[in-house]
Image 1 (cartoon, one colour):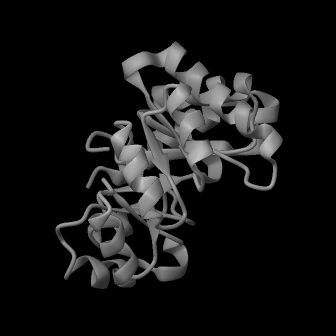
Image 2 (cartoon, helix red, strand yellow):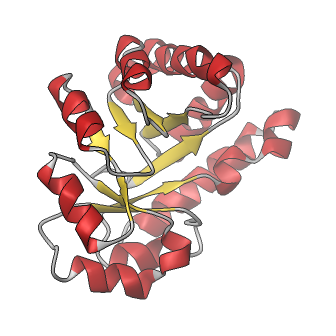
Image 3 (tube, rainbow, N blue to C red):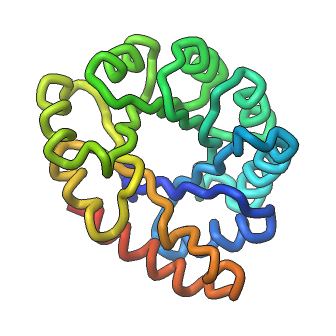
Length: 208
């Protein structure tokens, strides 16, 4: 996180495409990938874990990979068994945070209010994901960071190359991004160079 400040958020792709995406991210300077669980499709959860395992096997220590939208202990277990290094959630669940920490996984729960952010911190969260960032705006981020400067905030939701610097200047230490990092038309066409360029632009704009 300290290096590139960007977590690439990937959802709904098979293992082959995920590996191509990871290669494009690596060339563009991104070193963290979140592969997200589809809550409405439990039959795909093992596939999500397989993507995590494939990234770990291909990239080793060169790429940190974890799972997103982790809402249950079962999903946490799938992440850990696949070699995932962190979990991301849209909410604050102290039980999940503590269980992940006990397994040695990094935790990035989602919060929208100061009360939720402090609850996440008390449960042991490594980072607090301000979500949805685009609905809150950089001014809100600055306001919430001021009294809670001991927390490490990530901006997630509607964050891209054009506005990532705003959130970092407001006090976030990093951001989770999808957008053109997972452009489905580019993936379908195998235009990995475009995704690499998008990754490189994000990393450059986050280097403030």
